[in-house]
Length: 571
Image (cartoon, rainbow, N blue to C red; front, side):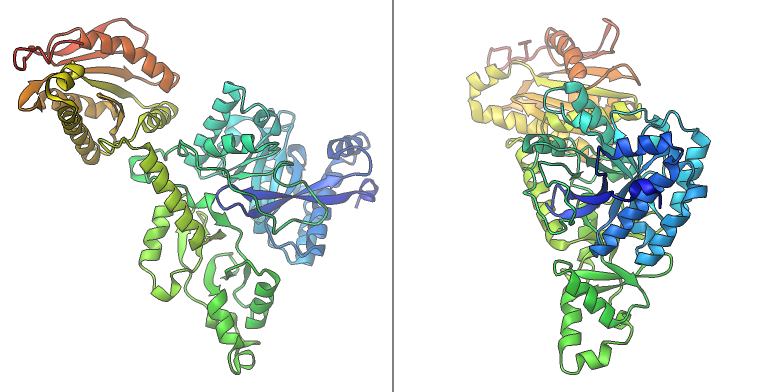
C-alpha cells in the first residue's frame, strides 16, 4: 500500500432511508492527517501514484469495515480516471474482499469527477470490469460536475448521488429544485436509486423527500464517525403533498412508493451455511428479521425467518439436531419481487402466501434475479397507509377526483417522454346562476354528474388522466388518439339541473414535443382559450396550440334557458 496512506484513517457516514428512518448503507470516507481526501489524491497525482493510492483507499475502507464487523452495504469512492484503469489496479481490492469475506455485491463503487478528462471507451471498459466482478456502480457529484448525460442513463449505473452543491439551494433556487425533480423522474424510469449527499437541515430533507429522494446522508442526519453508526435512526420527513413522479407507461401506473424506497440491506449467507452460522448472524444483528441464503450466482434460494428458526433450534434437542446441519432445512421458498415494483405489487405477493408467513420479509431482485435487499412487512403496511392517506387528502370531497397535482405530474411525464398530448379545461357555464336559481345542493349534483362522467372515461381509457381542480372546473390530459372521442362525449353529454339543460365550455391545448416547458406554461396558455370558449353561447369546444394565436372552434352550440333565465349563457 502506498506510503501516503500510512496515517489515513476511515470514517463512516450512514445513509438513511427516508421512509423507514433506518440506516441502509454507509459510506467510507478517507480522513488524512492533513487536508482532505482531494488534497491527498492531488499529492498522489503529483508524485505519479494516483491510481495505486485511489485503489489503496478502497482496500483500506474494506479492511476497516471488516474490523468493525460492518455487514451493511459499503460505499467507497473512486475517481473516474482510476475506474478507467481497473484492469491494472483492481487486484488488491479483490484480494481484500476474499480476505474479509465480503461479497462484491455489497460494495458500491461511487465514481467521482472529473469525467471529461477520461477517455470514454476506457471508462466504459472499467465500469464493465467492475460490474463483472460483482460491484454495484454509482455516480457521485451529480448536479455539479462534468458528468455526461449518456453515462447518467447507462444501464450499468444503479445509484445516482446528488451533489451537496445543488442540494444547498433547493429551498431558495427554483432551477435547482427543477433539476433535482428532473433527475428524480429519470431515476424512477430507469429503476435507479437516488441519494442526496450533504443534507444540512430538516427543511432541506423535507424538500428533497417531496421531490422523490428516498435516501439521504449529511451532518444534519448523522455525522461521519470512525465507528459505524449502524443502529442510528432518524424521524422520517412528513409525507409530502405531492407523490413521486409516476412511471412512464399506463401499465405501470400503480400509485404508491416503489419497493426500492422501502428496501433494507439483506443479511445473506451462502446456501451451504449451517444452522449455527445462521444463529450467529442473527445474534450479531438483533434488528434483522431474516437471513437469505444465496447460491453461487447470488440468487436467493431460501429465506430463514428469525422467529421460526429460533423456535426450532432452541427447543428440546434443537441445537443437537440442527446446529451443524444445513440451515436450508429450516428455510422457506423465498418470496420475491422485482426492482421497480410498487408496494401494491408486494401486497399481491403477500396475498398468495401461507398465513404462517404473513410477516416474512420479501426479497427484492435485480434484472439478473440476484438479491438486492429485503422489504419488511411493517414498513410496507406503513407505506401503503401513508399512500392512501395522501391520495385521500388530494381527492376532491365532492367528486372523489384528484386535484391539479395529479394533472401536473402527468403533464410533466408526457413532456419528458416527448409525447403528443392535449390538456382540456372544462367549465360549467353560468354555474353561479344554477346555484342562485336552484340552490347549492343542485349545483353539487351537477358537479357530481360531470365528475362521474370524467371518472368513467378515466377508467375506460388508461391513457387519460382526469382531475377536479375546484368549483366547477375540471382538467384532463389525454393522448392525441383519445382527444376527439373524449371531447365529443363531453359535448354530447346531457347536463341538467333539476331537469333543465345546462351548457359547458371546453378549452383544449394540443402540445407536441418541445412546444411547452411545463404545467405552469400549459395553464397560462389555456386561460385565453377558456375565455374564448366562454364567449360563445351554448356548449362550446375550442382548440389551440402553443406558439400560435389561431383558435379552432370545434363545437358551437345553441343557448338553452331554464325558467326564463339563460343558465347556459356565457359567464
